[in-house]
Amino acid sequence: MFRTRFKPLLLACLPIIAMAARVGVAEDWPHWRGPERNDHARIHSGWQGNSWGLGEETWRGEFGLGSASPIVVADKVYVLGWQNEFDTLHCVDASSGKELWTVSYPAPKYGRKATGDQGLYAGPCSTPEYDRETDYLYTLGIDGELRCWDTRQQGALIWSKNLYDEYDVPQRPRVNRSGLRDYGFTSSPLIQGDRLIVEVGATTGTLIGFDKKTGQELWQSEATSPAGHTGGPVPMLIEETPCVAVHNFDGLLITRIDGKQAGKTVAEVPWKTDFANNVATPAVLENSVVLTSSYNQHRISRLQIDLKGNVTTVWQLDEASKVCSPVIHKGYVYWAWREMHCVDFETGQQMWKGGHCGDAGSLIVTSDDRLIGWVNRGNLQLIDTATRSPRDFQQLAERTVLNRSDAWPHVAIAKHRLFCRDSAGSLVCLPLNSGPE
Image (cartoon, rainbow, N blue to C red; front, top):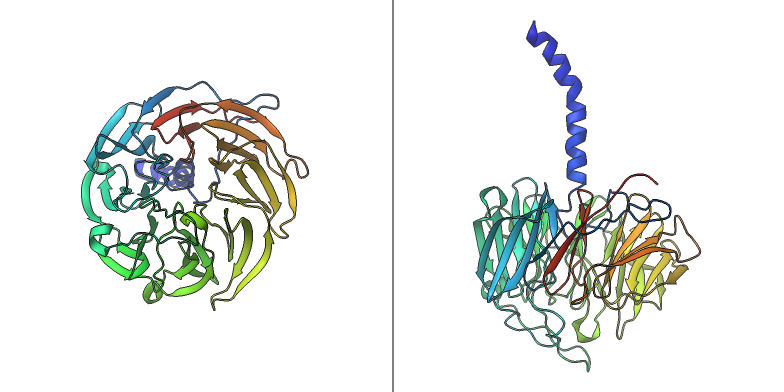
């Protein structure tokens, strides 16, 4: 009797349980640029009509030098930083900031072939990558130390390899007459299925695919350009074929990652920037890529790519983003460099620009069509998207959170909290009242 009554009840509850699980997953921030790797948050901005529901900090911690962004999974925050000749992965409680565990390994402050701009960065720049299937977490240090950790076992080491040692990665060459620049490894690893894809920049392959559970090499890309200085490869589908886009040293590379075709080049677009400053991660929507850099390039373009390798320039503007990765949302493209910018995704027409951002900047778009900017030396800004304000730049609020060093790391937003880090190692947690207006 009990079983016959319980089973229908259980079956009735399963959709609710599944929905709750999806909501929990959606509120995590497990990858570089968030759950969909595009700086889209499924959380309300907290704007209440005349005030921002951004509370005072609930905790603050020091996690060592580095520009790696924090990630958030299941009420835990993971942060990678450098201090006293060690890289350390910290796991802390998201609500309290209490340290749950740490793991460390010896590491230099800069990559072994680093040159230039060492007053602007130090320590790891690559954001950790989380795999939901295994609960493994992957880190890549500035000196090429690639490691796989088991978060269920307090960071037990599963496998590791040093990319400089294994692939004899050369120093990035000089571009034109600009100064020589090499910032080491900056690109976040990317999980796709059973593979971990890394922008290595080896002479035998720009991208290398590894077995995510063992670290065994599976394939190398046909392309052999040096690595860029972006935040990582971006997954994209071209005619239903899985690919990745990466802005390497020489320009845009689109590579297939499916089966026996993995590593095959789909398209390459020359785009070499002075000081090796291909920094902004490409933005992807379907078969389109928005690409940008400053210095000698100083432009932003929307490119359309097919599987035969044909590349069409849909539009190109004499505007640029030096660091901030563009964000595509509901027919518009946004970025933060010196000012906030918005252009029409279809035509490239400028909708508005305004405000003040400085060089350091990143954006997150929220579920209520607003932008959270993390700019300058640690300022949070809240701005209406063009969905709400199509003709005018409208900044709603601003808060100074940190003021020690450049805000290179992107903000993480999860569990109705903002996690803001600067390159000096401070991490601040701010509660976000995400109720309706």
